[in-house]
Amino acid sequence: MHRSKHEYLTSPPNLTGMPPGVPYIIGNEAAERFSYYGMKSVLTVFMAHYILNQSGVLAPMSPNEAYMYTHYFVFGVYFLPILGAIIADGWLGKYWTILSLSIVYCLGNLTLACMATSWGMAVGQRTMLAIGLTLICLGAGGIKPCVSANVGDQFGESNKHLLSKMFGWFYFSINAGSFISSILCPWLLANPKWGPGWAFGIPGIAMVIATLFFWGGRKKMVHVPPGGLGYLRQTFSRDGLITLLRIAMVYVFILVFWALWGMSNGVEWTLQAEKMNLHWLGMDLIAAQVQTANPILILLFIPLVNYVIYPAIHKIFPLTPLRKIGIGLFLTGLSFVVIVWIQGQIDLGLKPSINWQLLAYVILTLGETMVSITGLEFSYTQAPNTMKSSVMALWLFTVAFGEFFVGKFNAWDLNADGTRKLTDYQYFTFFTILMFAAAVVFVVVACFYKGRTYLQTQQLTLDEIATEPILHGGTPS
Image (cartoon, rainbow, N blue to C red; front, side, top):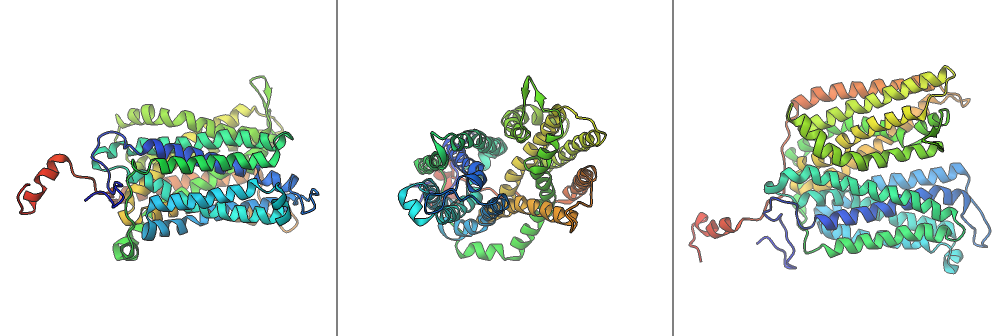
């Protein structure tokens, strides 16, 4: 009664340890993130420096055009999760949605890798690029909400205490894959021996491996059936809409976190680093290299937080997901206090050590482990069972709208003559105050939040199966 006609599990097994599908999910996520971030790390540079016309002559885009198309691509990746969520929750289920869209994803990578072939040149590299990126948008965006929801589907009441650790290792695999590929793929692109074909081809191979890994775990994973029309009924029911509104109240504050986090991995912190003393441990760093501190620190902090910091805090007071998020928001604000201080030193004509910005990265990344990882767990547990992927899609919107907010603020800050209304010191101070204000209001809202945990119905134990006919008025066979 708990297996499909293909003998796949349709509800979590009654275990106290990690579910058997976990290694396949972690392997799939690490390889997929390697693929995505590896391809993304060379995309803008390729468009601005390497793209050829149909005659094989170098015909690069302008930097602004390359930036524009990169932003369109990222927007598509974070907008299309809602499409994947609807397909998963209402029609195919998460497993088949992930598998089918992963194949689309592979085709997108194949298209990019073939841009330099004779037929790719005949079609046109710009056309091939547009086709490949569209397919990757559909694949990467479509599977994003389903993959994290599929993680939670593997757990039931008997092992729900491991869900937080699982999302931690899931996030670890994301950063491990992205860190390695973000170093490797730009090197491949810049090396004449390898070039664009390999720089886009290696991420494509990684995505094929990710797809095979996921398919290989099909008999180990739980395949929760789609909700069908029940999904639409629950989503637009009074309880469904109230649930979405309640979750959205929390997401508003996480949106502010992503707005500030985006600055650390974007141009703002990098431009500040250019004005600092970049000599570090006997090396002269490039300003853009400093942001790699974030994925490195994530890999270090996830086990530290899960196995040392959380247990230590838990001895003082119980740590709920909302309390973890609240602490993370305050830490994010504190990291920007350091950035404001650095900017003050720069404005005085000094050149502070890059160690100060690295300290800001340490504090910010610690906050990230508490906000982002916990947000995944919170999103899953607070979503009704037929709406798991849909709520995960809304979670991804917080990233997109955080970036959108910063973009709009920067547009307001820019005068018609190209000058800015705010100084760098005022700019960073504004976002610091905004983060602390959001954190304080979040604490108040969290005190009144009345959540409900939704986990997938778990398989019966052998004892429960033996007594089930009696419970329903029958006799045991």
